Image 1 (cartoon, one colour):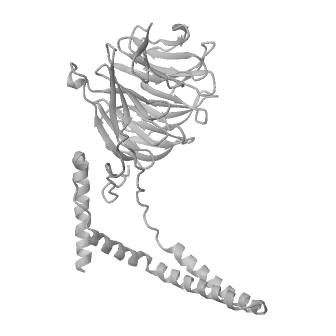
Image 2 (image 1 turned 120 degrees about the vertical axis):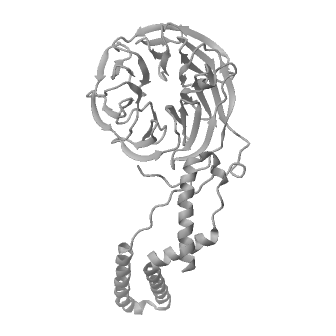
Image 3 (image 1 turned 180 degrees about the vertical axis):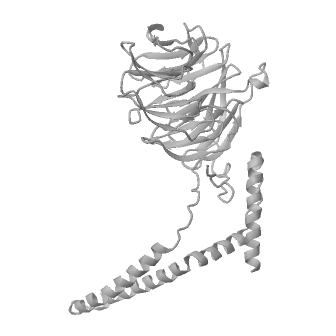
Length: 440
């Protein structure tokens, strides 16, 4: 009886710890140790209560199997008929025990242990823009990357050294989206001036304009297989363009507010959009119609990112980061804890998901379990105001080993994994008793 009382008290203590943990997340590593004796008593009581019958059935089956093995060894061929006469009864008893096993309640699924990821560190800060840096794209060869800013300039930087290679001028307002084609020497840009441009990188000149948006264009994406460009913006639409002819193939209408993010992939659904109307829409590219609308978010969806290897995507909103499975948009899990307006997401093939907040905070998550393994607050560039800490866009390079963020303090920051870190120096603070996945 005393053991049971101790167990219930232990449970209550941990419930209150869960609440305290949510309030004081920064003290995550300072929680008191688990009472191992109480844990063992709890597991023993639970096992006896739930699985007492199972243990008995397992023992019976094991005994039956041992008997059968002895029989098969001892009896020779002329006793085969006796064996066949004996086996049906054993099969019947095994079947009965199988029925008992099915009828017993199952154990609740426990949170799986997250994969260990090395912590990330700030390696380089690049300055050069004269306004908020709003967009970034890495070229397929992984040699350079482009950034677009509120100073109306697109700058191309060497990825290895961080040196400026070239500046492209032509937009008359902030550059909000960039994409580099992996099949053509083209860079695409869009901005608050309603313009969508195609730059020929051999001549560093604009060779095509895509006219049609009625307001600022916030996001663009290139189809991986087709010569198609997708753009989305403040006129609540996403538009599908033929890259070569500049024709507006489809106008995807249905959102009731700014479309902040558009992504495209080769498999169905080929187009996914996230909007300030708190919804995500999956689109049929051939028909130009909405396949389904996901209404789980309660606040505006500012970013959507596709997983590079799994057929999944994540969406970011101030209420939660949510993971979904394609093609039907099945909800998988919430990633809670980044209490900020989340402007951008990035994910690498190793399963590291990064979210960037409007307050300059970076949260790094394990994709599979949703475990938040690191939190960073980038220092503001000297000379900027402290309230200019905001991350507007981010992307991993092609290898997934460098993270590039663009920020409100007019800088570009590059992060890399800490190569000296090991699982011993930076252990996973994995506490399934407290860090239970919340249900929404």
